[in-house]
Image (cartoon, rainbow over all chains, first blue to last red; front, side):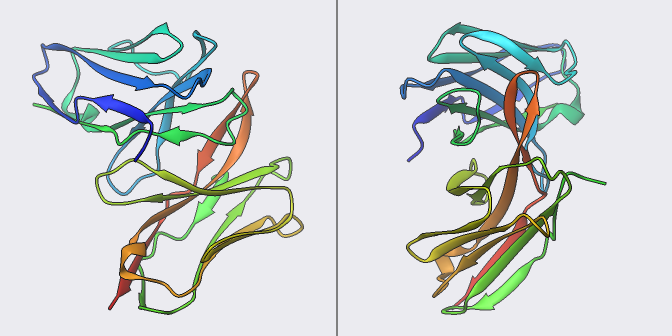
Length: 113
Length: 113
């Protein structure tokens, strides 16, 4: 079982809704990541937090807003999404931002209607 | 040219076969190489990682890196139906002071009884 926990596992939201995806890890890792994965495609990096600071934003639209309240938690706030944003959203963590032992959660399936 | 190339398959083999999964990469500066297994509708699970060239073995799995040809391989011995999944290779790409996994598109493996 993965030690990166994501909630909810499934989310259906309308284009005017505001919702959040949550991620938690208790491995003492200092780097956390959000990835987006469409069907039959590899994960695509969205954001990287290193030591609770945003270190990488891969030009993600502002309707996605990450938040790192502390070293164990990472949230992704969603607002005014489009149907094409429907995907599997993966949270991951690693000991530091060297990335070589990155562990993924099971993902949150998002459907935008 | 994508940084990591991987044949999407599907690759279908009988139970007990030796499976060879392969990727090529373009950047000779890459040093870390990872293999992830992803079951349907689940997050990727880290199988193995290797540094530089050479082999690394873990049970039925062997990871091999040939830096001279920029070729990475994962061998699965005595394949089982439970090995049926998508296998993603990844390398670490330096970005903004961090090292971020860059994924191949994944190879779908089917092991039939």
